[in-house]
Length: 148
Image (cartoon, rainbow, N blue to C red; front, side, top):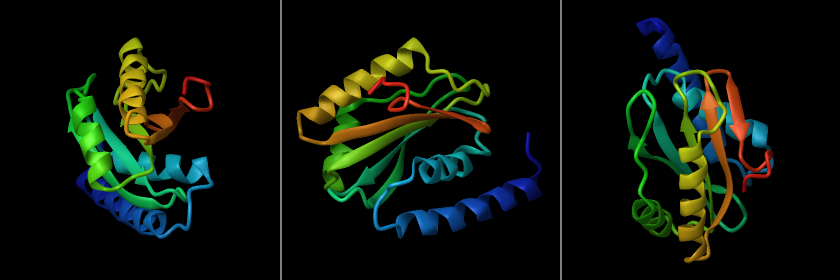
């Protein structure tokens, strides 16, 4: 898929964006989040489920990978998602995962896990702001689609 040189270039671009991303005062640009996620997932050939943890001003606390899966699925457990969010004292989160297939359209399983995670996080007063699916250069926002 990518040569070793291309992977190093993408990794460098990701580190530059990640440094800028974690220094932001607050997240007010969905485009910035998508660009960050595109570089985070660019070289992966398997599904990865990640979470961006935010404080009450929507400043980035951290971004963590929660699960690495196969070419078409990644197991995610509400208990682990809640535990991670509480550990970082997050007030809100943005969920994200990639589709190595190149198709950003969410599956029924994607919609179901988003509902389960949102319900679990609601119990501890942590807001899910979005769930973004990245598929190569394409992406889909659950919030923009009215799915959150």
